Amino acid sequence: MKDRADKIAAWLADYLKTSVAERYVVGISGGVDSALAAKLAVMGCGRDAVYGLILPCHSSREDKAAAAQVVEWLQIDYREIRLTLVQDEFVRLGIIQYENTDSVNKAYGNLKSRLRMCALYLYANANNGLVLGTSNRSELEIGYFTKYGDGGVDVEPLANLPKTDVWEMAQLLDMPEKIVGRPPTAGLWAGQTDENELGMTYQELDLILRELPAERSYPELAKEFRKVNNMRYYNKHKLAAPIQCPY
Image (cartoon, helix red, strand yellow):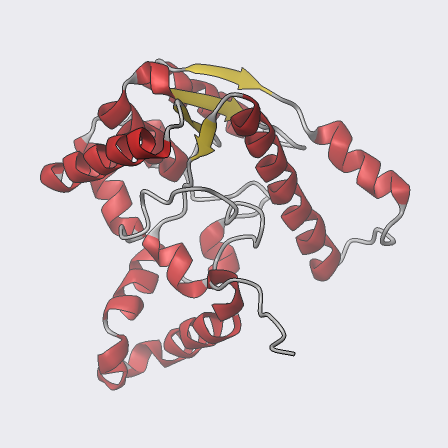
């Protein structure tokens, strides 16, 4: 795992050099994925080549405190940009009628992710930077990310790391246990956690993704296998360029 971390760090350094960009810009959420992605960039490129943005948007105190702990651990320069009023303006504009339903809450949750993407690219474009992605292999395989939100990045250093490997690598690199042990969440709405939304733990998800060819060997997880297969099928569009009409 240490060799793998070193290889990712070296790849990030090479990519930055060949891109002629000067730095990576990363959104620091306070979660293990963004902390690990930033740490690997620091290992490969140095602290001066990694800049963090903390982007609270109706965020909890716990999320803000965790993000502050991450940048302290990384010892990188960062800036906090509050997006709460920006999202509130969309609500005020009344593009959709707000109501407390799953579909509307998810729509505004996705908006939050897309606002963060805009802030990251605004800073990166103005400062000759590349936006560093924080999605892991488990999320990418099932399309568990916001299209043109956290999926809108320049590089994905964790793209071949299942979530369980992310945790292992984070511990190996001495990430604070409070960050490693936080319940995974994108903070898109109050009380949202990845595993509640997925309906399974990341350990179960990684097992299912690894054992898809041998699905029949796990009858006790038949429901979970069906759910993962459905997510992989219906979210395929997130991993492809927009479909172009041939006429």
